[in-house]
Length: 379
Image (cartoon, rainbow, N blue to C red; front, side):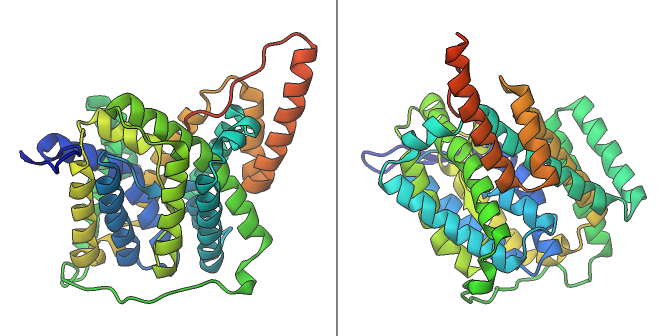
């Protein structure tokens, strides 16, 4: 184990426990990253390097194993074909600007009073259903490979854990990719650097709806719940508004350079902690892994079979859906989720908030105790 400490700060350790925590955090990141870059013109090296850079930045800044994850609502819409790349860039910048402003003025406390937990869980369920639909579309192209991935996932789940099933399918997919990749698939390649800014045509209704749906999840999970977990697990005093500010800075700086819109997330923090991470060393190790893949193994990842990628997305969707159903207003959560699948996530969020506010006004009049504010969900 390697340990360093700067005067007056938390230590940073590089150990087996930090490594296992880092691997766990990658389980939900890599399937989404691979899917987005396989189905869009986004550059896989740039996307991975974006995650690598900000794993380091926020790890060193907060000195705890904070997570850096894709904005799952936006990623799901891109995977499903509901958002074009230009719209994704615009949505990432808009979400970043909103988070930066809200964080700087300390506005999350007021947002929490309006957005109830069942609505956030409903948006999470909608994202899970969209991912599940995309997973099916990807898997039907090669049912044999998809079935092999399902069998491997089932065996890993029975013998080890649900998290191991995702790692097992990732390993199987990489093995198949190595067999089919070109001879020069593993080689050093430095990605080009360019700036991409959205034009006026990218500011569409779909962009706005995507931003609204994403912010609904980000406020609850990436800011509020993450702040609570950092305090509980690491005794770290990181406010939701600080996390919102850092997410705003991260997206405004990285998205124009080709990164996927990113956020923090309570799921990533919980995963790192559960698998042994206790310091920002997990962030440094994970960043190193992302950077190595981005610089040396893009050809392998690009050959990852889409059918197995569909199974990976299904595993991610199931985990998101399980978390979404832990709600005290199942009818509202399911309603928002189905509305998000059949219409869009933004409309579902607005409708859910409206219904929730009406119900909260009616319940006291009937003498029924009202439901608490937003809690943990996956970003």
